[in-house]
Image 1 (cartoon, chains in turn cyan, green):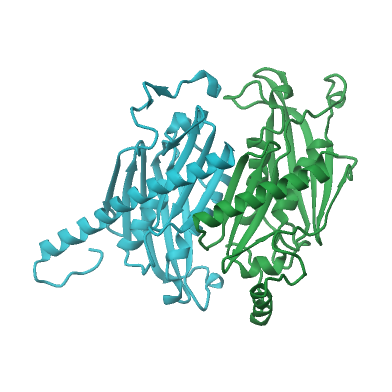
Image 2: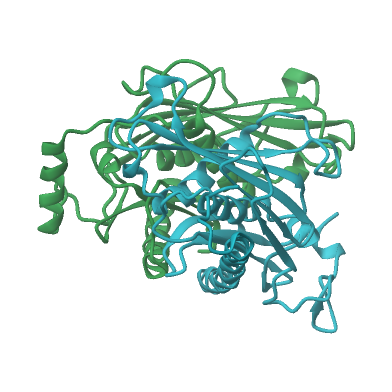
Length: 250
Length: 260
């Protein structure tokens, strides 16, 4: 099937009824795993992604340790049942690349120098995929890092913009991603410092500009949701424990 | 773990002090590439090949083709498979073994340029729809890593493809013909260090900067691929500036080396 076979807009709205600059519904839950030091479950449209953070903890194998800072490891993994056609389990080239850029999206804000010779492990499992799994993974991972009490300079929020029928759209869904003309995921701090940027497809320099602006706007909205999810969890904990001291994590 | 080049503090200071004066250690301007040379058809056994020298960096790209099965979702299109070997002879920090993250990222970026620019006419590589199509193997061999091997590899890939002959006669599929090429993607990499943007980083410059942005452009000046790499951050204004520089440089390189 070609892009020309599909019409992406009906009465000015997208196939799922969104405007061009509208995000899919997002749900964020903090602290969903008991064993992990920090965790987060996120739904972005049809994506269901769970992230766990372990650490700072001892590095194995030990030769990987850095004497001046903690290392950060990020593992992006897709469940074999998360996509239409079964994905062969285990890492492939795509997941290696996504793990690398996702780690590099988060590392700039993590205060790794606080924990020399240790590792902060971030594990991201994609349970259901619907275009935008890397951005969902990064959003969940950033919240999980905060939930684990890892010192960070700021939050990281991630969102993609795409192009379909020569129109720039926010947060492309599966059809728009598969048959669209471009995909541009970014991640950034609330200040607008970009920590991840990838792009494939075809964009004029002006469209590229517009897509970056739109993705940044989406990321800003997602930041508010991440913040709210964290505040909700921890304010509930305070209510529950009353005057007692609040213990992190459990 | 990623392979990293270690650089002494004193060298780092040296490079940094030059930057403050608006200079690069090898005397280039910030938007100047090292000397580029492309030699084609260097490997007779390959269907297409190119040896690219970017300053002292050397990258050899070979293209092999063979008939094979198409993907189910594109039954009448040829297949592109891109691989990169960061062999240990190219750098003290490369190790033997399966490709690491850096090698995978490099291969995937070279692939992204060729694929997203639609440089190869994949429809023309169909032999029997649904049954048999041509598989194009693009293999990148890094020989000497003196910095910015990505741009050199991407340049080598398109140069090799432009010199590729489809080996139809060897497989009893008619006469050999030139691989149809429809676009010339060019990758340009810029590093950022203390708000200075530098094109075509050398190996020491790569070691001091922790942010880089690669932009891949097509012949009509559009962008068909981008990737930020490294553990730093970029301001949107820096991104837009890099795009402006990248588009201009890519045009120069394309006209000078590939459209002759």
